[in-house]
Length: 352
Image (cartoon, rainbow, N blue to C red):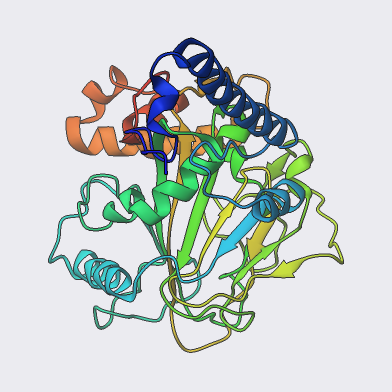
């Protein structure tokens, strides 16, 4: 029996005279051809897909194809119940004042007036910009979340937009709805293929409490003009929707269990219905972008209306901190508001 070498199952005399020259040539030719074929296969696989990179080989071909065709992908049971409990407790602390809000945007529904953690006080419907809260921001850094994000947009990952959504029970005026929209409307950076949202419910979500509604394949359409829908009882601030949107028959309601996570493209048409239950529908989300993304000039684009609202909010915050006079010298552009929010999660920071 021939003795094995340190190279594994190859016989030891394969690397000794008189066979050494020929066998070394054959051996390294084999390694080169195998590696080259692997690279060729990977390149051929990636050439088929526009919306994922799969550099960590996490996604199956079926998952890549589903995201390619539909613009979203649901991963079951991704975030642990322990993590979800921590996020819910932190949200409660932020609502009651036990924890500082660090300049987060605190939003309340225009009509739903039910209290939650503070008796007699209207409940918070959404917290935006929790990038400086160490408990909630942990969600954006979870290895489970990051690895799927990386498979879609690549390894240099920035957390750009963070939200804790607490959809209240509807008052009967349907104000807890969120119109169909594309998230790219809010973002002055490109390309869209390097942006993805992760959205995780803390409780079971379905049509009754206003789960996400998506239009499969709509991520392949261009960015549409957005604005406030003409709803009878009004719309919550910054809840822009696609103008002149016509209801489509192929919409899907994403029923999800706590900890399930949907990753979706920023051009995907999506929204949510009213909460018809007596419980608050809680979810946490983050929009990630590859740090190689670049900012664009929004002048003359559909971004202008939302950019004005976002910078107006920033101006109010600056005025509160520095006063009216100093605030005039410290106005920020829409691009700068996102630079302020962005946090590096993995890799190196480049343009963003």
